[in-house]
Structures are given as C-alpha cells and as structure tokens.
Length: 341
Image (tube, rainbow, N blue to C red):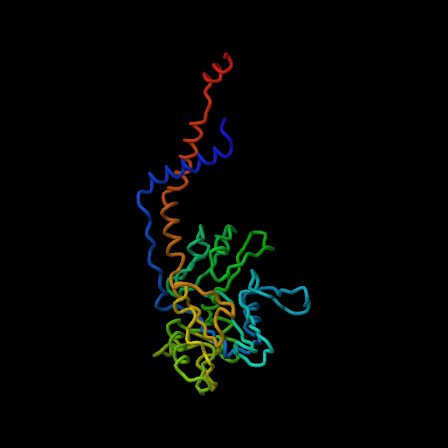
C-alpha cells in the first residue's frame, strides 16, 4: 500500500527526473539591465529635508489617495509606512537627545521612502501578467490595474518593500509611486519635487541628477553653494525642451553643504536605480537596505524562463505525477487474484 509520504516522494522524484530530461543545460543568468539614457528620476538630499511632509500631502492629492489614520491620531493623515494608499513618506531617524540634525549620535535625520524605479526591477520580472512594466524611454516603473490579477508576486519580489496591496480593494489592486507619469503629458513632473520648498527632492534625468549629487559630494561640509529646486534642467536644454515642463525649474538658492556620507545611494545598488539619495547618516540607519550591485531579477528571471518557457516545468511535473500514478495503479486482474486467494 502506498502511503502519502511515498506518493509525495515519488512525485518529486518523477518530476525532477522528467525535468532533467527536458532541460539539458543549466540556465546562465543574463546581464543586469541598465537605465535608459533618458531615464527620469529623483534626487533626494536628506540634509536639505526639513520634514515638512509637503511632498506626502502633494502625492496624496495628485493620486487621489485617501488619508490614513493611526490608532493614536484620528485627526490627521498620519501613515506610519507606505501602503496601497500612501506612495510617498518621509521617515525620521532618532538617536539619543536628538539635539543635532543629521548627526548619528544624539541627532535626527529624515529619509524619503518611495519607489526607487530600479534599472532592472524585480517587480516587473516577477509579474506573470505584465501588470508591472518599465517604460523603455523614461524608465518609469508603471502599474496597470486592469491587467493585475492580485497575485502579489511584486510585493514579495521588491527588495525595498514598495508595492503594497490594497486590502480594501474588491479587485485586489497594488499601490505604488509611478513618478507621477499620468501628469507628464500636461507638463507636470513628480508632485513631491514640485512642492518641496528646499529642493530636498529634485526631479530630472537620472544622469543629470547623478552628476549633481557628485558635485555636492565634492564640496566641503559647511561650504556655501547653490541648490536647485523643482526640476533640474539637462545641460544644453533648448527652450522647447524647457517649455515642456511646468512648475519650478532651476530656481537656485544658497545653502550650506551637508556632511555627506561619500556615497550616492542608488548609483550601483541592485543594478542601479533612477531615484538617488544623499545622506549625512549611514543609509542602513535611515532605513535603506544594503544591497549588492547585481539585481536579483537577472538570475531569477532566467531560471523562471528556463523552467516555465514552453511549459517545461508544468509538463515535467505532470509527467512525474503520471509515472507515479501508473506505477501504483492496481489492475482488475490483480484485484481478482487477490480476492480468490
């Protein structure tokens, strides 16, 4: 008599054997995808952020997202983390007496939390129905609610914990920052950058934002410099290109350079992201994960396509189940002989 354990063991063995005969070679991971040349993104400078949360309110407004209340505060929109209805949030690092801004000891600092728009996004790779997409021109990671089946693979795949499931949605939707792509056609860029009073969040081409970030890192802490607000114009931008965008652009103001950690977060992390960050406090302490320079999608997607391309894995498992079932079937003749003995 075949036990449940024997049946499962046989299924696994049969499936593995069948898969081995169908997939003769081990898949090699593809190269990590790069940012498009005209990729759009954000530069967030934590030393310029004052924690006013204007970007949070603007994001809610342009995306028609409702307020979220905590158990403590029932009067104000006070989300504790990003969610299916909160795409952007400013979090706070606290230590000791919190006397000095941007100090790791006895200080405090701010950090923006929103979609990083990875060059090689795991959410896009993991989505089985292409509800998550990456624009080939702008690089913006977008979401199509009509295509989504609510499987939440994107939620599990993202190393930044950004896509969030809307549990109150009857159709099972995902919520995340899409860099306000729905406003681009009207000449408006990301609302968080449009309203930021200090230029802590800056919109532009990722290539130009990276150059601006490195310019700041090269300056001495405490040195005065000009900081752009709103949208960073690309070098040699024509009047026609400039006229495409509304809102603040190149409205510089004088500010002191922060004591930055000499690293632009997002330049290389996870294959690179289109949202870049500067901070005077270690990035791990302000909530940013320590990630390798290679995107996981480069490996996982290759394995998925190898196993599921042409229904290889499903057919292999079916073959294994069929083999186990046939091996353990009891024929009528055996039943009769067993009954006569």
